[in-house]
Amino acid sequence: MEFEGEYSKGKKWNGITKEYNFRGNVIFEGKYLNGDKIGIVKEYYNKDELSLEWECLNGIKNGKLKEYGINKEIEFEGEYLNNELNGKVKKILF
Image 1 (cartoon, rainbow, N blue to C red):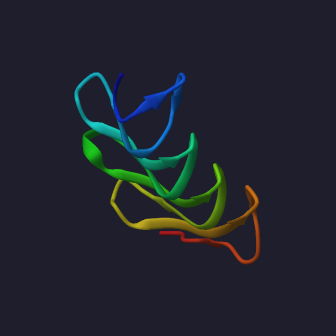
Image 2: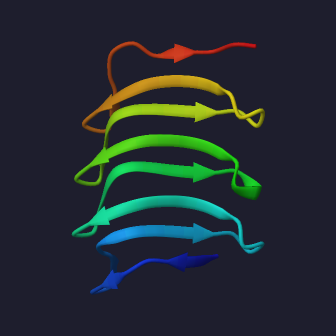
Image 3: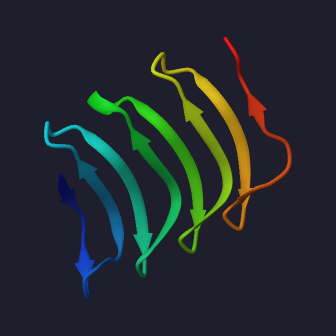
C-alpha cells in the first residue's frame, strides 16, 4: 500500500490524505486535522470505484453515510452521531 499525505510525530496529521493499493488505485481519501479525520471521508473498491462516503468530526463519524454498490448506485444511506447510527436509515434493494 502507498500513502500520500503529511505525517507529524508518527501520525497522519494535517491535510488531504490518499492511500493506494498495490496496483496504484486510490482506496482511501480524506482530510486530517491534528491527527483526526474531518470532513468527507471516502473509501473505494478497486479501480477508484466509490464504496463508502461519510462525514467525520474530530476523528469520529458524525453526519451522513452513503454506501455504494459495484454498480455505482447508493445501496444504503444513514446518519451518524458520535460514531453511532442515528435516526432513519435507508436500505435500497434492487
